[in-house]
Amino acid sequence: MDKQGRKKLLTGSYLGMALAMFLIVYAISFPLDEGVSHGLSITGTLLYIFTFAIGAGPVTGIIIPELSGARTRSKVMGFSFTVHWICNFLVGLYFLELVKKLGVGAVYAGFGGVSFLSALFAYNFIVETKGRSLEEIEMSLSPAAPGKRE
Image 1 (tube, rainbow, N blue to C red):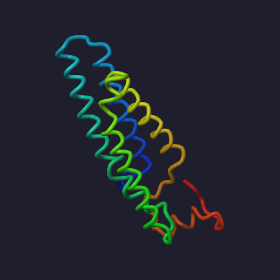
Image 2 (cartoon, rainbow, N blue to C red):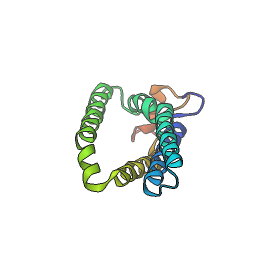
Image 3 (cartoon, helix red, strand yellow):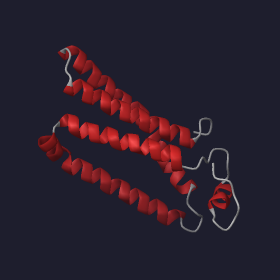
Image 4 (cartoon, rainbow, N blue to C red):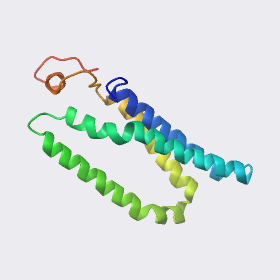
């Protein structure tokens, strides 16, 4: 993370996750040969796991406290991980119901779309924190202090 930078890892991770989901959607929606479709689905699943593990998984746990002020850091972390687990619970709760109503391809396409939008958000709005102390980051994000957003 310190070599590549958080922003680059997040953006690449979300793009890889989107590509993986769309690969699975392609394998499901346009079955070429049963063996090829299964291979594409497995490749998509492994690609999703790999790209999540190198960016979206670990980086979010590091960048959230880095972008939070010292006084609010613990509350922001508590809130963000509460929201994270509530969303995980809701996905798990409604996934099969959505698959029954919309089909596997549509649900995975939705996940791919969310991942792609997350990549756009990370690219356009996440501040790079690589090589900076927490104090430097807080100063650059403070509206009262002149600082450069990267």
